Length: 436
Image (cartoon, rainbow, N blue to C red; front, side, top):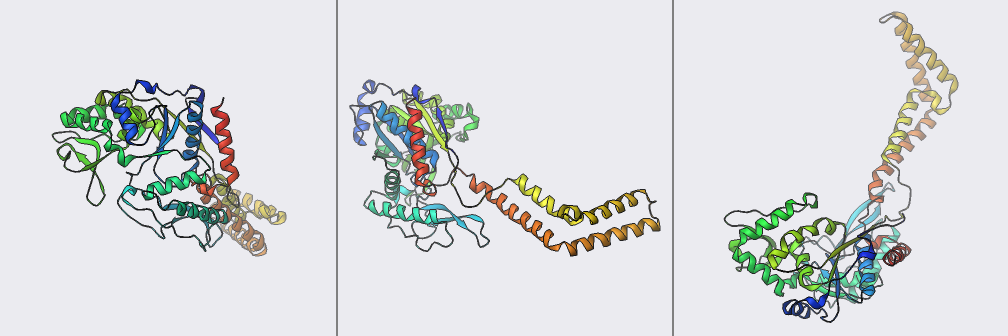
């Protein structure tokens, strides 16, 4: 395991909540409707449901510390409008050759391939991972703990709530208040956004696109404009599938906010500080460019916190450069006896090479010298076969180890793939940083 690398933007000492007492009646009504307090500030963060990677865990630790520091309530925005399946998880396994691999495993007993977002799905009774073939011991052990946690929340309102509560419980945190993205259409802030789109959809889409254009590295696509402008909403089919919303479809189907509008509404009325990860740090400034004018509202400030740690897997990964060096050595040894310590044969090889260089091209003598060199190399390969085989095997092992390196360096493994000490160390480091 590597030492956690933490990133706070800005530094934690500069994090501030807005004055919640300046909120109007509609904003306070939104908070009350979604179970949030109206007598103290709210620090909010969120993500899709699942067993998150340590970068998400770090922002949860940081937001929790910030809430305590500012006398605020911590709230988690469950992005249950996304079509990812929280029941699926990547697990590290050992291949038949002993190499590190990655497999997909589902708490639901297989790849569910359910197209509908998790908001429309009931909690599951998770499948036990007993006998998970070739899974690393750490993975199988922690998957058992996850199954137990999921079963303890089998009466949650949805699979999204079940996985979110289970993950937070496994991290040993006091449960924050949960707010669900699928409930945001019930807020006054959302209705103000929809009303603005209804009055002038092309203006809203153009304003949105202008803000997106100002941050090209955020990875956000622009809306299609024209006579029937695309809106920053999802149209939800009767089967629960998300589809892009056009202005002509507004009001004719159930709708959900898309990603930017989701966090934007949270900042408009539901919280007084929003804590993002690395992705949100890149895209959230877009909201400051289009949403205040659309909603006629001031948005709460946002910050960002994330971390990078990688698990401690058995074996040792090596770089592609090291693997290439091992392959070169094995191939070089096939033609150079000195690599395996056969100095007499190496001197003879060098002597023949010098002789060949000085003999006339196409001469009989040169051809005979080439033949002698060929025979010497063939004899070297027969006599030194065990040593050459060892080098070839080492090159193959190095090639496999280098292929595993991206898995070993992957920061997006679930926190379940990290030992408990690593997560405790991460929590302690975040606490220290937030108190600086």
